[in-house]
Length: 260
Image (cartoon, rainbow, N blue to C red; front, side, top):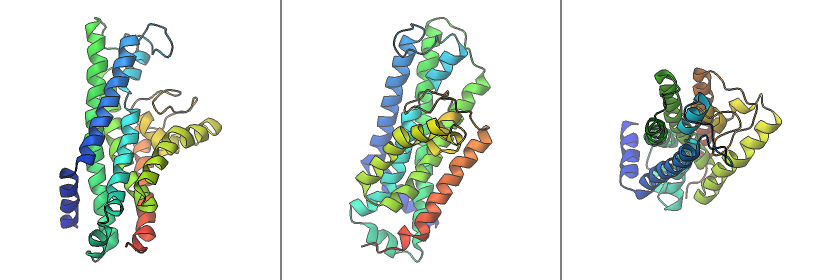
């Protein structure tokens, strides 16, 4: 198992896709955080409240929603890359247990997702707090709350990446898996959450976004209005459960199908 994990990390380090996705996540997070912070308190369009308020600073710090979706995409790319590049036969059939390969991919994806989440959280916090300091505002949120939002983005990205590995192993087609992730984040969860707000906190992206500080009705992708967040440990449990369930289903079904 250790050898398989090392092999997956080697693949990740020697391909440009992972670095490109991390760069994309950071760039979009920086763009959103800058736009929100620059227009905060102006009352124009979709502007967030002033950064001098807890609501405004929270919105700026929680500009990591797209990064969370990108983390899930990263997980699907790690899983589907074997099929896209025709290396699945060597990767799976060379090992005595295909489920071990899938588990190694999920572990690798979780680690990469954590790094992506860390970069996005640091970017959002740096920009939001930087704008607040430049305007002479006091920090409207306690340090513990800021740290909790960052931890939510980091853990959420890691667990969504692991879940993405399971989803990618089930779908196999890389473009189809990526489309499925975006459709789930931008449409399915918003629709389901709008219809049943009591169910919304148990949906993977919504749970991660709420952990990262996204307020009800906010975020990019947006989450439904009226959603009450779960306690932080419960949100982690929801995401971990989704990652484990998807990986287990993929190991029991997709990993046993014909690989060639």
